[in-house]
Each structure stands twice: as structure tokens, then as C-alpha cells.
Length: 252
Image 1 (cartoon, rainbow, N blue to C red):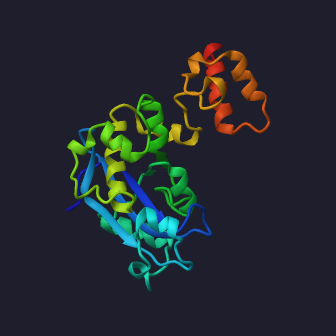
Image 2 (tube, rainbow, N blue to C red):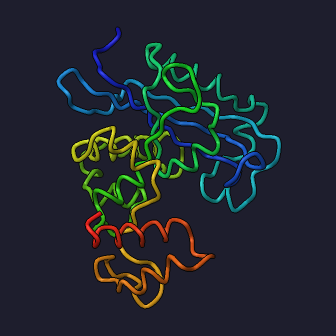
């Protein structure tokens, strides 16, 4: 039976044979839907989820096997991943409902592997929310911002099913954890804010370099911030954070 909702956020997680496509391939996809009820509450829909394994052309390196432990015999003779087929499969699991927005923890990774995923109107690319970037904004004081650290730091291990979030580093359990983190984020921010933060560089809670390493940006000397901006080899994300702090001080 079709359930009542106003918006569907589809949380996806991938396991792959490496870090960068096309040399690396998707060998597992897991997803959970997070939906907004008619009353406005965001909830994990534990009836709308799925997990699928896929074959690959090249063997998975040992250092990658050591992370997800998906053995060659598990994916032997399975079809290769196809974005359109995967989207149709997820929709079939979700009462025929397409996602309004896709979500992943550190979504830059998933987006690189899933450029063909479609927006609700059928166009590409799809809209994405990065729960990692959002967590940096909402909880800068967290000891780290991986989904497993946030699981325990937020106390979600006391509110979620242990058998559904294990084993870590497999697509379906990781999607389950990220879905619950997303619900926590949505108590603090709107979907529009999460979408905007996703297209911006990550907001670093502290300065990660030099003599101000580990210090809040508010405590970093203005001269050091200007020095960062002047360095041609400085990472773009670091320059963005330095400029943001200078703009804050200037009232911009």
C-alpha cells in the first residue's frame, strides 16, 4: 500500500573496487529511503530499502577487499552495474516512487560513480545531499565526522537496530546509519540548506595547517589567513575557509 509522504530522500551507499571510476567499479549498492510524513517529521522508512551486488571486469585489490570483504565468488557471474537499471530497481522497491534527492555520506564519492542518476523530472544530474558536509556545519564539535563516529557520538547506537547497522563498510548497513544521521540533521536544518552546503566546500571546524593547526578560525591571525590566500598551491577548500573567515570579520 502506498504510504503518505511529502518528500523522499534516498540514502545510497556504494562499495567499489577502488576509489576512482572508471578504473574502479561498483560492486554493491545499498539504499534506505528517508521520508517526510504529512506531519512534517523526517523518518527512516524501514520498509523501503534494498541491497544488490554487481560483477566487475577487474579483480578487487586486496587492500580494498580488506575494507568491505566482498569476496570474488560472491559477485562471480553477476551483471555489471548500470545506473538506469539500478534506479529502476530502487523505485520498484519504493512503491514506484522516484527520489526527490539522493543522499550519501561524503557524497562526492557516490556522485563520481553515479553521474547518470536522474533528478525527479528525469533530467541529469540528480540533486544530492552530503551528510558529511552538513555534519561539519551542524556539529563542528564532534570528535570526527565519519558516519560510524557520528553513530556513537549522537547516541544513535541506542536508538537503532544493531543487526541492521552491521557489518560496517557494507553498503546496506552504512546506508542505514547515514539515513539516521540525516534525520538528526533535518531536525537542525532544512533540505534547502543541506543542498546548498553540499555544493559548497566543506566548512572545516578548525585550521588544519601551520602554527594555527587545530585552532578555531576565529583565533587564526588575519595575516596568516591572507598568506593562505596568496599561496598558488594552497588547496581550494582551505582558501575558501580562510576567505570565509576574513569575510566574517569584515561583516560580509
